[in-house]
Image (cartoon, rainbow, N blue to C red; front, side, top):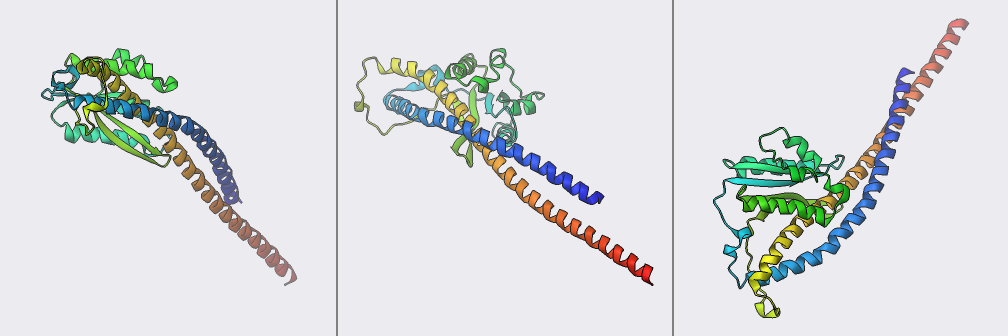
Length: 289
């Protein structure tokens, strides 16, 4: 009977876990819809801004721009974007692995610092030599609590300032790009220096009132802030998609486990009843003998 009690306790425990995972799945699904809408609404603006910059850069030499300065790469800053919470499958671990691979392989022999946007990656690198501490950014650590463009722009401004004063020669961003609720792709994007891209669109498609270089110098910082904001927005949507998928799988697994435990319970209960019947029949036969 002790075995039956243990199985009953496990069935109850799995049932409670299933309720929690199911509730977390629904919460993530609701948050995912809002996060996905935010990413979707931002992409047309980002695409048009990129198109204008490509159109301008096709006819200009950006090598003199401070943000496009190509220097010998000695110091590298990796901006790793994860979530503050777990229970989202391999979402955070994939970013941590990619950052580790960049440090060990791509930038081996360089002085590498990791700017941690998200508690999970911070927990990994906080006690290492690669951890990059910046008081201004630390003050805005929990940007997910109130994810707004102006807050992300302050982080981007600080990164850009560190590049201009030559604290770093190269800055890359590692984040999860949102595809759908079940798919997130780990992306590594160069943030600084800017890589000029050739545009197939002819410059005659636009009429510019100001000199083109003035427009570029004004739009480039905005474009970089938008790039970081888009990466964080993508990561935010990907987190909820990954958590929703993980909790859906956890709920299904809990249902299967509960079903298996109930079958085991019924078998054990039937075996116990059979043994009691056999004992009663055996006792009766002994009395009659």
